[in-house]
Amino acid sequence: MSVILNNDLCKQYGVKAITLLLPQSKASGLRCRVDEHETRIYEVANGSYQMTLKWNAQGKECNIKINIHDNGSVELLESNSVTEEQLRANKEVIIGRQYEAKPLHEALASQLQQTQLQQSSEEVKFFVAAFNKCRRLEWPTIKASSFCCSK
Image (cartoon, rainbow, N blue to C red; front, side, top):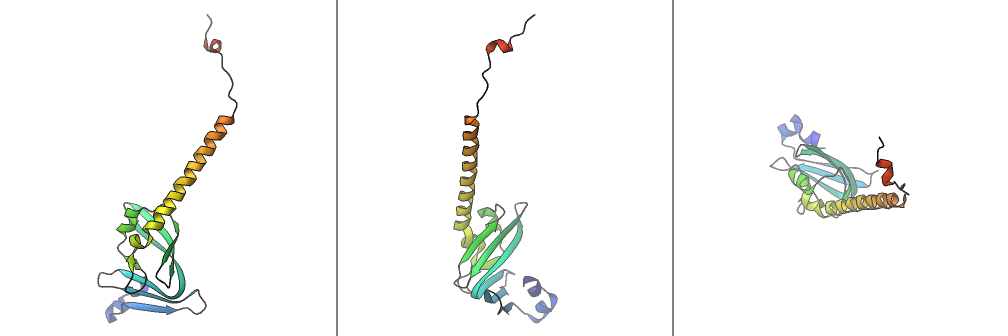
């Protein structure tokens, strides 16, 4: 949708918004508009819409998959370890209802923290399990005499 809005023809005629009606989809109405700062604003009129966003921040390609709902809520489905600072760096996208739309970092920060805590928790569980497995191994007893050399 943003490709269409950034097209020369749309710019020539001052087209700033597109609404798609998708009767066979979970989202029967999806609207994308571009504001005076070239920020894309996505809103779902009915149902929910899943989308993937990509941008570069701090020298890294950031990817997130989100689900936008018609009540204005946004659900983080996947991310490639995107940080809150990287979310803040994305100034190109705002999500939600027309007068309630929020930048990505506001819409997703709490979910991002929760996702990071879950990932950290999973890493800790892995290391604890690995440590416990190592503790159960029987290590051979080495006698001090085995390190001595004879002449």
